[in-house]
Amino acid sequence: MSSLFDPVQLGAVRAPNRVLMAPLTRARATRAHVPTPIMADYYRQRASAGLIISEGVGVSQQGMGWPHAAGLWSAEQIEGWKPVTAAVHEAGGRIFAQLWHMGRLVHSSVTGEQPVSPSPITAPGHAHTYEGNKPYEQPRALTVEEIPALVETFATAARNAIAAGFDGVQIHGANGYLIDEFLRDGVNRREDDYGGSPEKRVRLLREITQAVADAIGADRTAVRLSLNGDTQGTDDSDPASLSLAVAQALEPIGLAFLELRELRPDGTRGASDVPRQSPLIRQHYSGPLVLNSDYDAARAQADLDSGLAQAISFGRPFISNPDLPERLSAGAPLNELQQATLYTQGAEGYVDYPALEAA
Image (cartoon, rainbow, N blue to C red):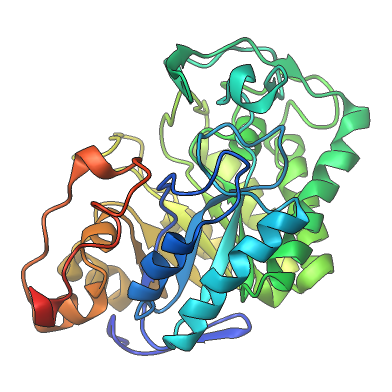
């Protein structure tokens, strides 16, 4: 059996440990969605992760609705990411870019256009904008004719990520954003080849994943999903059938890894009584499986010992503990997370958390 601190091969990347850094939106880029120098410091500090999965990175202006989040569709954005990836590599780390289209969870005041989704169903809650929170707007349904261009935005962003120095990319198919909206029948009410049966609802994910794998290599391509329970108003009536269709669609591609964010009944940032889908997916997906959500060291090691997972990704603990693998290995206490500075634009609560030797 492997421990959290043993190396693992994730496609083209050999991770020195199995403590991965999950994607975490931090809102430190410019209004033009260009990375800033402080972001290089932040990711450098966390280079001891087996692999860093970056914050969600927009594939297009249409899909980039989070204020001060970074993109990967312009030359300026590519250049802005280069010092970040260089800093991680100089510190001995590895980093994937998470490719993000927010679908209906945007506001026109940020993107400049009406949100898009598989179906014209408004999300509950509110969008983050530069003017504060605003109610979500009704999206328009993407047409079949628009989908090839959408798929190409992911492939182009993947090529841009490699040009910017990333070691690979992760396709964001979770958390109620565009791909997740297509996957789950609570939002996808289409009657064409992208809606209806689970096999049809998986089609967009499969096409995007194959296009990205063709662009940069399947061994540098990963996917993130959240299939057990409601996330930001997106849910499914039959998670098991959908999970089976997802596993069967992704298995032939040969991904670097598949990451599952799995809500728990006692979850601290979202909770669900829907069973975890990872045991079912494990039966039909033979590649590396990375699990996420509310893990501590003991729970993480148990899922490695069972063979269910090959690595575990940690989110919020990595925000306040830049040296998280060392702390977990030593059984050391963790720094407390500052909630108030999660999405502010300054250094406080971003690059000022102490490492173990300085704590």
